[in-house]
Image (cartoon, rainbow, N blue to C red; front, top):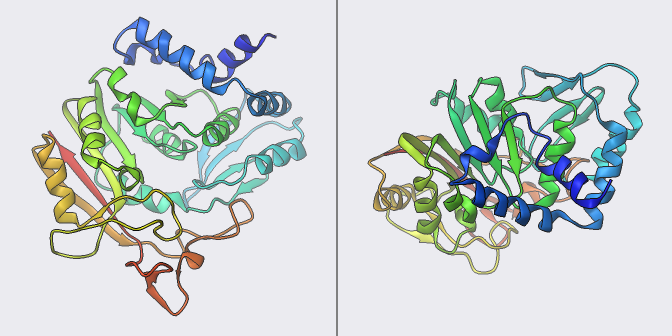
Length: 325
């Protein structure tokens, strides 16, 4: 199989839904496809593809345990060791957890906790959803559980895309897709989405208003934007602009108060902003595991005062807000 064929099979033809109709026109979709295939054409992708052939199944069944683990059960005959080896090769796993047969991938983030904060207030049934910065697609499967009409994930980081394709190979066909694109590609999409999710992305932007305006443009007339982001736990109008790092994270440019976040959303054209949740991040939600890196939240906080990060900033607090047109 030549390179272009296997890349097409892996990144474009693997999905059961024709997502080309969500782009502005066919020429743009063809251009995006060429961009994707050029981006992923490397030795790491070929190695991943070869390993994936050993694990691929067509009879997986998606289920969810009571604690939010995305599970796939499938018939015997596939080497569990091959599955374990490829999952380990794809570390670190930030979002999850997932269970593939006997293998539990215990991710750094217990993503079901964040999902519960979102899903309690938003109806995804029969809706078209865009998840920007979706990581390995954990929330796409939670949306499938809610019977969303179509869920489309974007994430430019190839490791997360590999993780999604790995998990997806054990799942039945759902109306979901994930492409290695960023929010900067949103202008190529039609304004047809009922909901746009943007979780853990805003604070990495030098100009958050540009991001918010881009996300607004892909919503339909009755659409809603769901933002989850770091915030300052304060009633005033201020924005923290960390120097160098925040909680050991690079490229954290702005952490607003909720009041400022609301002002940003209103300024780009949203008509109403509702706060769904404000929660302090705890070591129960974010922690180091065998499937992630050796350092996590407990290492990012001041060892003598867990109300502060190791750099001396306020410890992480995250808000979920819903913005309507």
